Image (cartoon, rainbow, N blue to C red; front, side, top):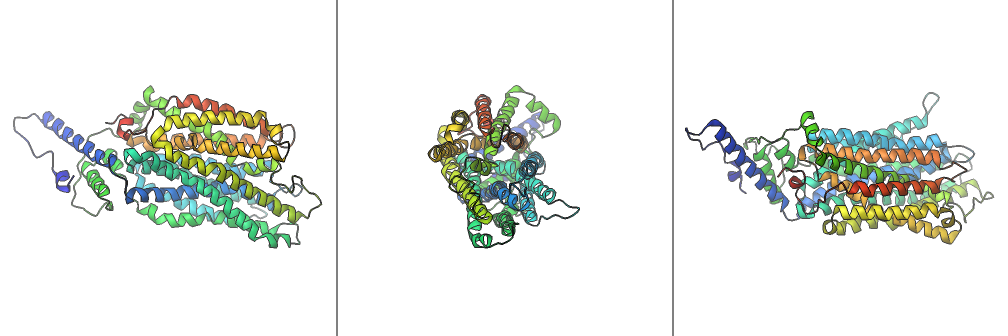
Length: 542
């Protein structure tokens, strides 16, 4: 499609005998044909360097998200030694709940706000803003302190809430940008590769924590004070290094162009969008303003607004998809974040984080602290490398072959079975060292089927099934529903885990997880299959 062909006006051919309404209808029809032709080009485009760039730019953001979110899982154990209960050397339930739930609460807010703003102001204008928030707030956490009139945990919770707002914005923006730039036949793999960077971020947090703990070993063991001052430096360094990938990606986030679909369907500029698509297909940079002589050519399509929003989602065929995607994400995140935020606590509960399976009270406190932190880091490395990362990339291989819906159903079914076993057989699984290995294997298997299952597909489907004018908003609503599940799971875990005695309720928490996975099976049945279908077909905009 040439620029000259795109620039041809549909309003030049007029006859005095044609009624005005007939000429207008003809113009609209021609513009719609041009829109369809432009979209067809992007849907059928071959994989190019531009597609790879989108994956990398969006993926680095998810890497940073996961690092910042899950680093607190290990950092909370470090904080317990410095700021926790001086008797148990652990955070109190309220302290632990505050720092772990602050980020999901902020994420909930960010997903709703940024999802809505991206549909109003554009993907480009918002992309990079959320990453800037993440960089500033990550660095702010490392400077958290307290005083007579300022509580340390209050400051840390404040920064982690704002971090969550930035993280929340990344979900709808990265999903929608990668889906709207993708060709139909590779869209699943592109979006999965972006989301899979979450696994690498989780692994990096565990690996960096292990390196830091090891590097500070001699300092900690030779520390004569009972205040574990070197551990205070460790958690600050662990959290602070999360700024690095964000800073690297920031320039590319701020310079990424607007998606052609937003230009076509929200700004309703057929000519501008078609020019952008042509440059994308030819692997040239899309830079708005590089050709100011290209005039605007408006398409009279549906316009976003509250009335249109309610009209669209008041139809059951559309509402059931929104409900299905939102509840599926909610059910999944109850278990996913219930485990992800508390894996350190679970490892300690099954004696994985102790010395030779005991608390070894005769050992020096500094030695016990080092061994405990090392075991927690190693345990999280095993859980991440053994389940999280393989699950993402197996899903990458099959997502465009099997489809989203079968993979999500399979994942929920597998997780229901796994959590049922882990809950009802919990006491036997942690009875001795050998059975504990079986528990760790099931834990890894749960991580595997989370990612080769609903954790990935709940991210993909909302980025595909809704119309362009509401795609980011609806994705934000679905993602926020997931974070609501994460908040509930975290509150329940902290408040319930010691009911009946220390860590005695954990087995019942796994049983609760199994119930939510079962409900996820039924919500998945409300969703359509999106494999090899255009975004316009899925949202009834063809």
